Length: 295
Image 1 (cartoon, rainbow, N blue to C red):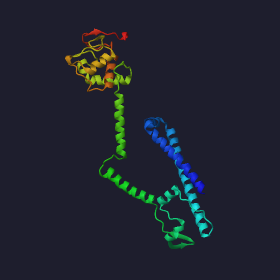
Image 2 (image 1 turned 120 degrees about the horizontal axis):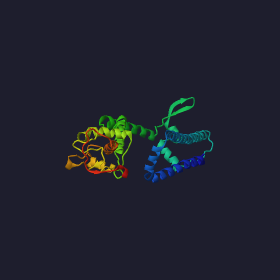
Image 3 (image 1 turned 90 degrees about the horizontal axis):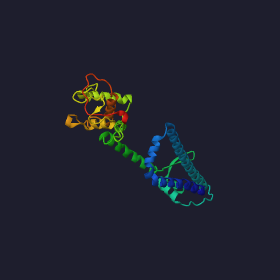
Image 4 (image 1 turned 180 degrees about the vertical axis):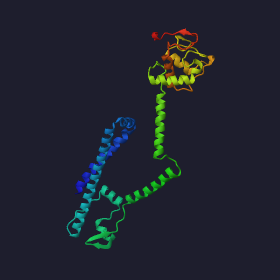
């Protein structure tokens, strides 16, 4: 029994220590990659992973229960042999058994008479054993944790509750989505024919630009945007930058602080979509000819 216990102790401790040592050494390097891997897992893979982890935990608990049961059986057998006056193998105090004795505040079998009560039920004696120190420590830690949790989350409102955490996470996700949606590569601009983008550009144009260029882009204070004449260039990049930076000397403000990059891109494509149309009462040509087929 002694050798079996030592073998089981080593079989558990060595892999566990090796696992945590390797995990700690590689945690810093693999944390980001692990997070990305978890995010890319499918629902089925996540469920299988959780089930596998659960089975490993259950297996570990069963193994610990077996070890504890073996130690109890060994103690009972030893006690019986002591009562019957049979020779008993002297216990060799190991570091593991010494640690267990201290943690559990266990009373040796030979000293149980000192804590034996007067109660005896059909030969079953009652002992005045103390609760294990680790159990009492967990009890007090739970109380302290509960008080701290109440003060932090419900008294001082120092940290958000689950519902608030959800709202914060949703707000951050929306902000990130808006940020990503506003990413435009200004070094390689091109017109888009996406109907949703064109429709959005139309709404933005009519709300902000039509006052100078009219809804049909025939021109009023500003130039006609449907013909082939352009003052500041007719390419996607030229139109985009004109809207973004404005033309202060001609009275056109910069729209960079009022419109997002995506909205400016959409307005640019909407302007291009009305090229070569026939607005009512168009303004005379201004600027130089720009041919789109030359792009």
